[in-house]
Image (tube, rainbow, N blue to C red; front, side, top):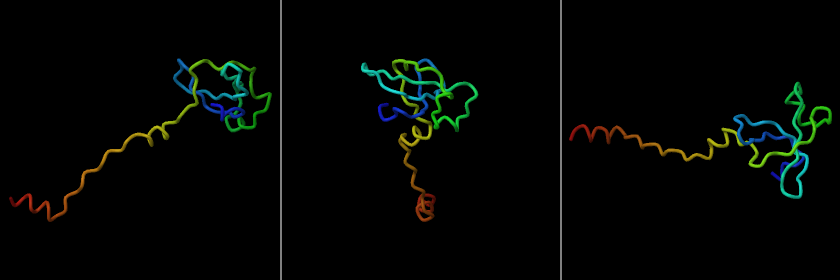
Length: 98
């Protein structure tokens, strides 16, 4: 998460189903992160501008929080099944005539 300091990212919080946007402001000495949440009514496309009036007060990120990894990334990491080799007409004809 250190590479995300100063960025607005989706964060998976413990005991919640949906990830939430957070602006990671800084890291404390003990390793916990201080974040700011966007206010209600702020458009997602304007979050990257990081205006002071678009975000609420600084809060401490709970222990166990991690950056959200989308489904597209997770799908690519799964092992793919090997496809069965199709039989040629000649092999198929051989099997039938035995």
